[in-house]
Length: 167
Picture 1: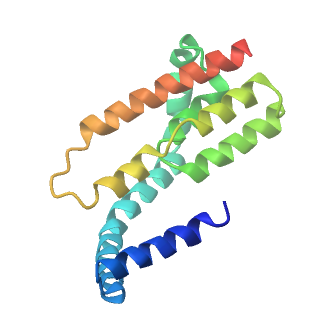
Picture 2 (picture 1 turned 180 degrees about the vertical axis):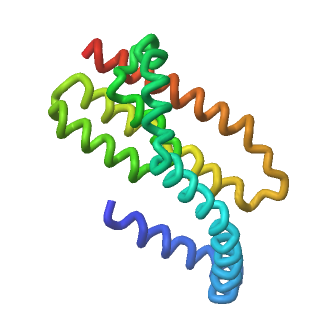
Picture 3 (picture 1 turned 135 degrees about the vertical axis):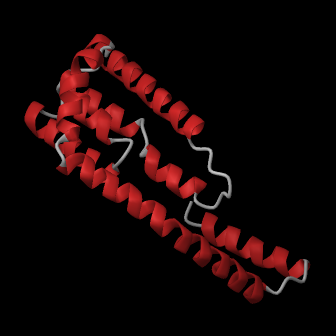
């Protein structure tokens, strides 16, 4: 496995030499485009980070978690995971903090901690990833893809809790 990256690097260099590509010029052009793309991401990412902070600081996360706990319980998601389920689509580090709190409070081998770990590992920070993926697009039709990902994240959470209960 230690030779995979060097082998790929050498293969690219050999391929470029065979095709008579000016490697440095192409590399520089790629870096120039990547820098433009990275700069276009900054406003999107800043908005996502501010939304996450406002969601938590305003107390909306706590109130929404409390309001949705009965619905989550109906689907088999323990009420202790409500805040984790709500924060994960917005913030990876915030949800990791909740995961750590759950593990410390209930113990690593508890049903709640197992569910939290599987839910954390089987979902993604939807809004952050959406900002990265869709930042370069001219037409931003985000509603359908985000809705699909949020529904699938919820379904994987339900399935994760069911599997943890069985095991």
